[in-house]
View 1 (cartoon, rainbow over the protein chains, first blue to last red):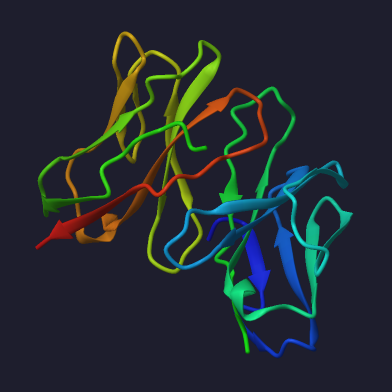
View 2 (view 1 turned 90 degrees about the vertical axis):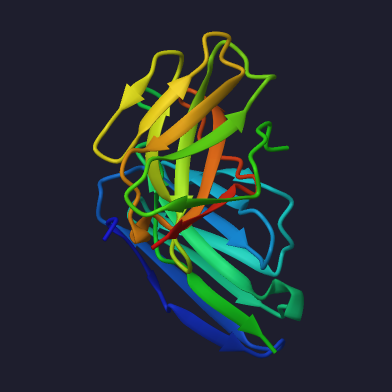
Length: 115
Length: 110
């Protein structure tokens, strides 16, 4: 247990569906992240939120829409996805105060399959 | 770009020390070396980090060469549960971003 939980753990959706991934951290951190890990590829950073403000958006398509309502929760809203979006989506959190080494704690991930 | 180079795979016998190398020849003076690992179907796990001195914690030791162009992660007594992909990452202190490469797939052999 890392203190970062993600739901659901597995998700299968059609290209016309709308779904949301949820991440919650119980560590008192103030920075949260979404990563994508496709088969045979390195983890790719998608979004970074610090103090509930988005500070990084790595050219992610608009069919992925993040939301950070407070420092403990992070969502990734999905709509009209493509089969190539099938991947493991990982959430992470860190202290983010730029005074520490900012070790990132990762959740277990959501395995997404787009049909 | 990941800025590090690691062998794609390694094997190690159970109970022996696993030594995982990493080259980071373009590392700058304010960049730290971090190691994470990812066990199959789980999220990455932080292991250790260092700047220029050798570091040790309950999981591993990190040896950084004097010129800081390479480092070695040492798992002193490898167990089957250490089978994972190990990532070496260089990163500015306080920088929010982690840039993962392809890592080294370490297999512990019984």
